[in-house]
Amino acid sequence: MTDVSTLLELSGVAAGAGGIGYAKVRAPRAYWSLVGLPIAIGRFTVTYSSTMDVCGLTVQPSRLRAFLVRNVARRSEVQPVPPKVRQVRGTSTGMRVTLRLPAGLEPADVAAASERLRHAWGVHSVHVTTTKPGFVELRMTGYDVLRRVRMPRRAPSGPMVVPVALREDGSAFVRDYRKIPHNLTLGANQSGKSMYQRNLVTGLAKHLVGLVGIDCKRGVEQRPYAPRLSALATDRDEAAGLLDALVTEMENRFDLLSEHGVSDLWELPETVRPVPLVVLVDEVAELFLTTVRKEEERRDRMVTQMVRLAQMSRAVGIFLEVCGQRFGSDLGKGATALRAQLTGRVVHRVNDKQTGEMGLGDISPEAVFAATAIPADRPGIAVAGDSSGGWSRIRTPETTPTEAAATCRAFAHLTPELPFLKPFRPTVPADAPAPVKGPSLIKPRPITD
Image (cartoon, rainbow, N blue to C red; front, side):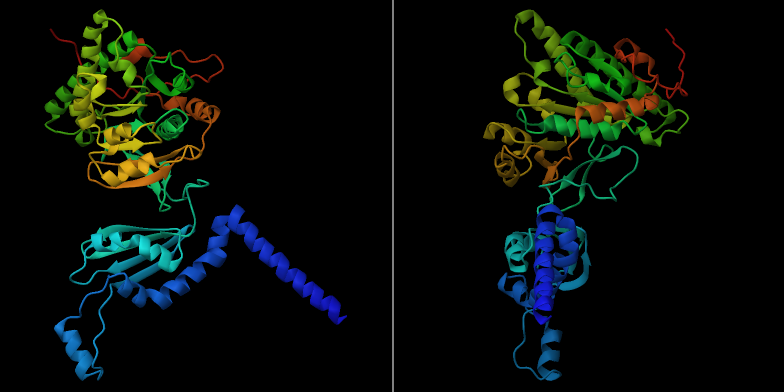
């Protein structure tokens, strides 16, 4: 009987160990919550002071503190002071620690030691974020959250805010068009650039916004989104006409702002506010490159119109999402001027270092190195940055073209009625539901000579 009990106990232990090992590989969130997080919190609590000391993140105490230690605590040796721990909070992907920096330390000092902190506490990564002056937050992840993307349940939301991908610190990467109006997305074939665009369109389709597509590859990428698109150009001739129409609309919207004495679209009353527009350019090089001399005039006009939109359209609610495999001065006149106006940058795996420098070279040299180090067997991983110099690795969740097309059909009733885009409205397949006609979002204006 004793042998049977012992055998059952050993079998239970073996099954438990096997279950933990299985969960670590197949269910990393569950493993982290049950096993990894308690261990990490214990290791952090026990070794915090010594780790900060050996990592050079301590400062000499103030004179008052040194006086109290020597005369009240009766200790002859005064220890250096590490940052004060204000809050320790566990998450489903890692741990968040808020630190109060003592005088003499800055966030850059902590960020420079992030790799040493990662190894000392046995976590997958440590990211340092400044929350307010004097305070930083250590965002630790217990495992590789980009290996199998799972978007957080609570993501930022609001007008023109679209969660698109997952950051490597476990938070959501969002496109906030009111903060970063224009974006440049680069990536080689099979790098996940199309996946990024599908996730973006899927998120935008649920908002009250007009989507304008420019896909000079005969619409092979954007044609499935036709039920939700207000306009679609599938060749250079159509693209030229569509860009002219957008610039004319931009000028009309500026007239509307001037009439109401405001400088931004969102300051207008809702009754007269035009619907925001997002222009999706699938392959920007097709608008720049020419094969014969007679096409140069059309090309120069298209580039000029795009540069004008990038420079001024933010105030009137027209936003650009420019995608391409390669983008730089070698495309010709106007390319550098356009790139300078595209504040947001997302660079997937690229074929050469020069392309990474075109997208991220003016943001951070470390971001360029991170983009060129993306492995080919992990499509969807990219480096996202902006003109402030901040950058992070992201990965988009897998979304099939069928799923994106289904979302566009489901939200086709949100497609706004825009008369100036009617000549460019794509043909909706017969099996797609007809959009429900809603109130016009454009203020009627009389035509005068």
